[in-house]
Length: 431
Image 1 (cartoon, rainbow, N blue to C red):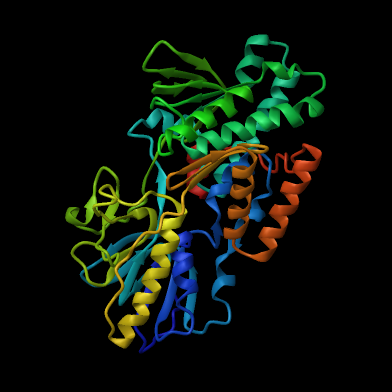
Image 2 (cartoon, rainbow, N blue to C red):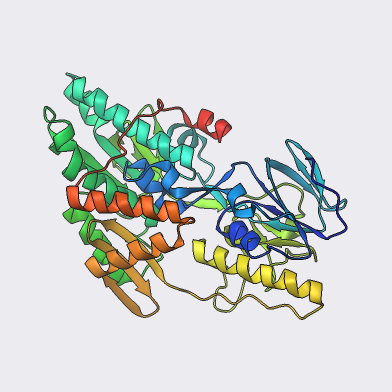
């Protein structure tokens, strides 16, 4: 890997997501050598991936170069690498570009899409966990619109114009709302010779309401917003399969569709090399103590979505959102500094800043403790918070300009097919 030898303790961080990025930003000018490994050379602001997939934002608006975070820091290094295995006995990381010894290891690998063992859905549906996958959805969507515009077969056109989304969590709800806005504000002008009323958007959810983690009040508001925008919602409905452009459910409901988007769950992106006692198998999350140390180890840590820290308040671990990852990264950086000084470590305490989801123009829901509200004010707060947490001044300015342009002109500027749609297997190999 060509990492310089050093007498300083070496911290290796795997993953440049919210947790890893906030950890490394706060380890500048310390007595450690810090090495960041990631299979991409950029950080992705995942909460806005759906806007890339629905042409609301260009991909570079939500991506930030990882090397830019560590530049001018002689004690910090980045390597583009995919980690295959961790040898905990030798304290070595096995990657596709070589091995690396660590004194302290931090796993911040986040999550991957969970298909609950259904290989057919995994192979045929599209999903959205990375920038290439979001662009893939955008390509598929606009390619299908072009095909629908030129076909003379009404049955085939219906199939091409029917969008089905599995999972009504924040991703599914926000994606459905964005598609509904695209239909009502943009596509009529772009396709004047096509009957836009033929476009259908279906949202499928196994629970009895949309946004199950949110308050009942926010769920009801979100559902009303979506239905008013023309989204058809199917609650207490479980997807059984998707093959040959046919979505089947575990009931009588089925859909012929050329666009089936899976957003029904995630699982931890764990790495091989750990004993079963360190990992919760069904969730693929590492068990950690209040200092984010992985069970059974004193020098291996896990932060963010991959970490499962049980407590009385959170018996199933913290929610797999950006805030726990950000806060754990910052707390662990303080503890690394305390280790050098021989001071007592700070246990992690999560401060819940609330949950929010946007449904569309002037429509969002926010839960902040016992306070729940929706509408324009919630939408404004959602917009401000997301701009604030975007990494980099340029990204904030470009995103703000795009949102302002879209708000004034009822338009989405990034509706481009920059590359043809590719099957999931190919995208996964590239990604």
